[in-house]
Image (tube, rainbow, N blue to C red; front, side):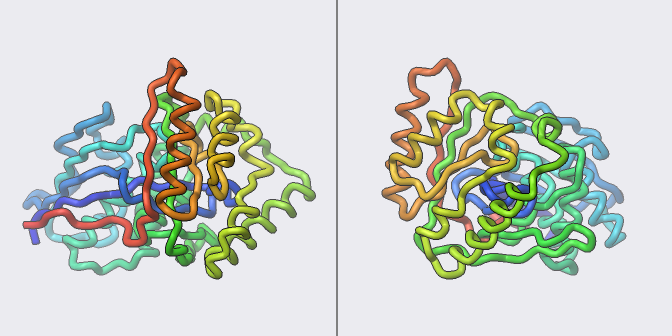
Length: 309
């Protein structure tokens, strides 16, 4: 294998109660990337379509992640990377992590798969740090593992793959404004009350239990964020109206996707997810903000090969 083209999916991080630890993988939104071997060693980004991103390797999230795995493996070849962005930067559905995780996943294939998913996530985090100012894995992990993931710890990294209930779908609203992850992190409180913390970790525990038991009622009860959402929701136009519409239309729960501005909901079944999408469109159709709405089954496979040579 000398070259491969991949689909690197969008992801939802935080998932309301699980700030910086929970995430899940989407199926209908994602970037495409081409990674090929070169005789000359090193990592070069040769093409970027769909976004104004740096070509300089050490300033590009895919480039930094690629350097991490290539430096560790030290192969007798280099790589060229082409990036076709379908996930807009700053959208809140893992644009930077799709580039970072896609790069390391594809390079691992070219190397003969010497690294496992845990190790690939660690390489991908190096790229994510360029975009957000801190290494975190809650977008990178679901892209590489697929489905729902929980980041138990960062140092050393430990990712737990969680089960995906068979009828689980997501509906995503993406208002086409940009919220930078670094700025969204800056507005968060440095300390929270013990009472709020207790509620939050109870919700995380019950959410995980709900996934294992396919208990949609328990999942719904757990999708509550007492800590981050009250602050970040102020950055998203019409957030309260959208969330209310999602819940009234039958969503299990709704919240901010990553650092925003996208708003996600989890739904039981495709029909329900489509009803939620219709309700969201009703809220946003007369607003002066361009937007996209996506309905997606949870992607349990993660990154996949489209073509190879």
